[in-house]
Length: 147
Image (tube, rainbow, N blue to C red):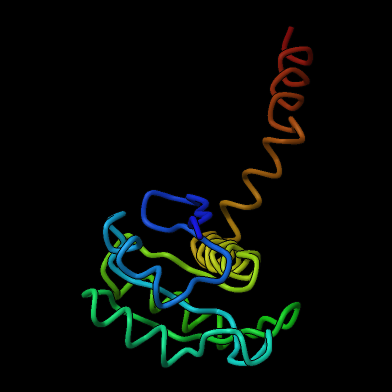
């Protein structure tokens, strides 16, 4: 089966379910780390287990991180674990789940969390004022009063 990989950033891509037999191809594509967001047995007995994928990843020199996420129930501690994994493991990283959606949502949540931490109230107020053109209006008003 051909891998269906979606590149999200230079360092992170996603994929639907992978199998232990995919590790050689994943390694040949240059990936260094795999993050599994799919709980064991979610797809029944035919779904490869986390331990089977981890063993195959190790055989091919890949780091492996298991952060199981139930669909539509991403928790803050899972986002934190994912963020830590992204910042500490070798790049590029391939994240996967059943369809790739949870793996991409995890990156989206980490990015949103980082954006919230990087903004301060003063910057937010300035951006809001600029967007409302209040400064421009004030300057025009002052000019008409002084004319």
